[in-house]
Length: 519
Image (cartoon, rainbow, N blue to C red; front, side, top):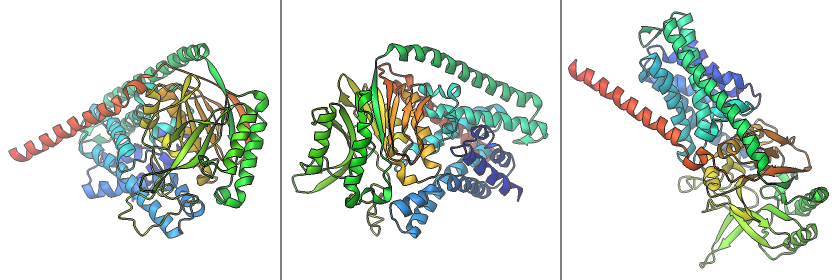
């Protein structure tokens, strides 16, 4: 029974560390109960079940909003919404189960555990980012997004570096607990000397991270001040998802965006930014609605970045549909566009359609979207914008690839109305902040229902809106050319962790087979 409680407590502590309730300090201790289980002799099946239990507790309490998004806002039947949510939770729970098994089977000494356990956690997060469709929602490093000093290492190692540091702290504190309670690790007593050594190593790594963080803040503040800036009018229309795609409300929605934009005209912004699919019609068509928007832009005499569905018709008279961002120049002509690269499963397309043939499309407004095929910034005046549409901002490699192609600023256009009044919009916003730090770019965020705002290249939130408010405001953001180490070289740290784990597992298995051969 005690092991079940330990497993559940780890799952709950992990969830509590994320927004909301945003008790970030709990992340530094959350895995200790699981590691206590790992310190004892257990069968593989028991470890697997306890790890799955911890994962289920964590992911069902962290991602509960998925049911609401699928059922109430996408109008998927409740049984199918619940089925998808349960399947996703079970899939994600496999990762904590693997973590528990690795801790129990492959880390014999305290020092090897101190370095290999965080490395394995990073590997699990890295694999989760890419495997199948990829779902890197709720990586552990995101819990610290408000702690500016600590998270500056993201421009070296990505969010994975912050996750590593957190798990390093968990392991060090775990051995301190084991020494205080006179317990053993792999049959060896955890002495105070061993425990304090691990704490000292962790403390040194933590201090180095803080020192590096302060250095980054000082040096980048100077760089930001020396760089040119532009003003951006961010429009948060607050259109209810239940009426968003209803043709009866199209004019009402348009009018709201137009009126909100007019309120910012006196601020003379360089670019107006509307959210994802702010226009629910095909802006590319020569329709009365499109002409109205173009005429308005000509009157405003300012460039606009607007989200709208789009289509391409091929030679066989077949259509492909896209979630697109249009850059419209002040003379009312479309100058550039970006098609969403990574789509939302079951929201914008049905994955594994051959296997899930019985599921029809439930998303309002469009057929199955197709993915964009280019990760390129769009040209705006003398600068380039890395456009990220909604969900794809949670994928570090997507944002990094676009910024690597000489983007000066990141603009995240999103529609978080799907999430309702849950913790999801806050979690989504926290993840966006890391893209700013990793790539050292200011990040403009325009969300239909919030959270809209401005995040500077150091991850500091300079402007932020509440949820479900009609708001328009103008911010100044810097335009940067200098590339971070992460932007230039990518996930070398995560790959190094993967290589280290490969070597550790290979050596451990070789030792195991040699022992069996000699016995």
